[in-house]
Image (cartoon, rainbow over all chains, first blue to last red; front, side):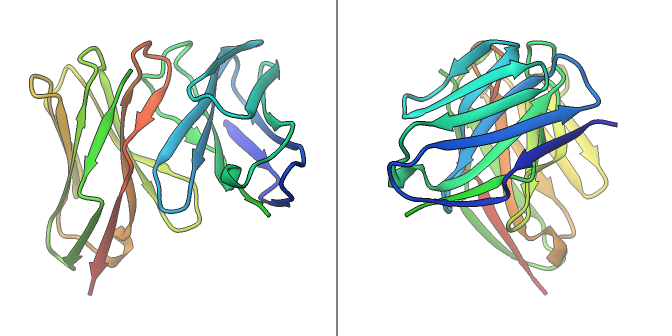
Length: 115
Length: 112
């Protein structure tokens, strides 16, 4: 069966520090991979998605970046965090072979607090 | 790009009543419409989805209806129970069909 791992579960970082959140998927090949952010009391905002190794699409301009160094690994990074980067970050995968018309499976999320 | 509007933002019902959450989308090419439930502090989980070739789908107490002409779809929960209390999100495909765009969510509270 397929599983998705996301870590760390919680993170407290000072303003201006770097960030690296990692997500890995097991039990499937060539998944679509996604990063969403959920600010307090708000919806799920799509940040990045990838339909293949090395392919990254960015939905919103910001100081975050994403990379997919391996088929089932998706990394969210920042060189310098801002207070506004605080939120609940969710990684997700889908099996739509490039299309998103199939269920998304979310990781348990990382709660990031920038102080 | 795709824009998904969801209403209401909060909904309070008595146990046993029905709850309806409505969403509209902007990209007429979208053909997949899932609904997710997120309990407090947990990850969103799919509860039901519908594709554009059908107008209605039902799974026990949950049903979803789709009106492609009007570009809106709705979630219906009948005989609500306290454990239905959660945040519900609708979603539709982005213009490229490669990602889901979510509504801002509806916080449903079911009181006993």
